[in-house]
Length: 569
Image 1 (cartoon, rainbow, N blue to C red):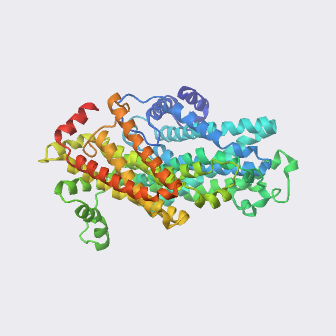
Image 2: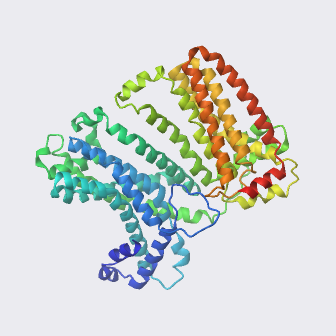
Image 3: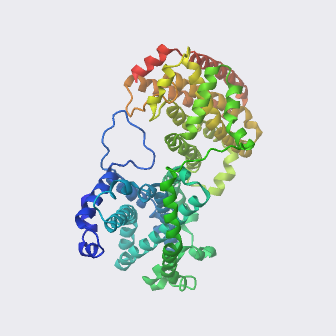
């Protein structure tokens, strides 16, 4: 694929020579850049591997994923109101494309290796600049073309060859609008955040994109299949004429004159004027400021920070919060040390955030998907009947999905070699460090999320669910400690994550995962049988006893048990 793209984009060699570029140098640079793109993991968060095998064909995988995304949102094009369908399609395309650019395009846009590797070589600046521009165009083409392919084919098959000719104009204008929005977003980030924090903010965009992508997969087809959605008309949304995507959708009236109306006749002119104005704004105002922002990012790593003498009491007290929690929740010094290590490492590790944070957004999306499985009811009817159901038990136990990611990333790290400090320290019982780390992620991540879920349950189903919330919290904690006891009896951030598990540990893990299922079914059984309410109290007592046993066993983990777990991995 890269060879084909390189051949196509190097066809106008005469033009490049007239611009002052050396064709041989340009081809060599682009070939290496595309090769590096093919080996670069996707931005959706990749787990480290035990054996570092060379990554290949990531470009083809990215093109395939873009094509799948494009198939997802062609459903609005099936609406009877063509303008409405095109407006929704263009809006989703713009949002998805912008998210992808913000989360992934920064690796291409802010690649400064050219300055240190290529500039010392006998390569002129025009060749270098042209190579960067062509690399960006190739990158955009690899996203835009597969994303728009499904819509292009559908419009040509259903609306005729004129629509197929018009569709590339729509995609081109959407690309221009998306580039303007991304440029403005980058400038906004650089305006209010320090250049050193830029990559952290981009990571949060990646997390938001993964949640948005997950929500589209599960919820978009269900929403589109509803009768209310099928009956939508573009004339029902008077504010739509203020959106650029509506202007582009209105340009379809050039293809089918019978779609002309008072609402779309004049607005279609903005389909050309709007992107033209955005291009002018980008070149005139945004590009110079953007270049200065990139220069700041390049120089931030070499600028020495002057030590600050003044101490801000508010920030200091906020920064020392984890130390207070460590003292409150741990009796031993080893427990406090494990708590502090886990608290700080989870705040600084980008890999941890990329793997754990999306799961917090997956829980409400999947819950909404499950409660709307009955297509006979509308969204409003489903919400009105929700307090009459017992689905709060499902929602409470779905929080255990987050637990699996938390526990996995608690013991695994791509910087696992730094764990030598554990073995060089006079630690009698490593279990105390492990338990302190568990308390840190439990208090920092799981309990706030569970509190939000519990408040929602109390709001919808009332105070009668308080005992259910207490039982669910106890059972999920039992499940978490059971997973740690059986599968992850290791020191925090001390192991490299393996892509393949051995059979013995795999079956143990599968067995322990049956625990929340059985506990959840037992809880649900007491809920649907009102006269068995007293069984909830019995279950809380039994779960508390089991929790204490697991807690004590995990706390008293010895070095021999840790080494045995390392050897079995």
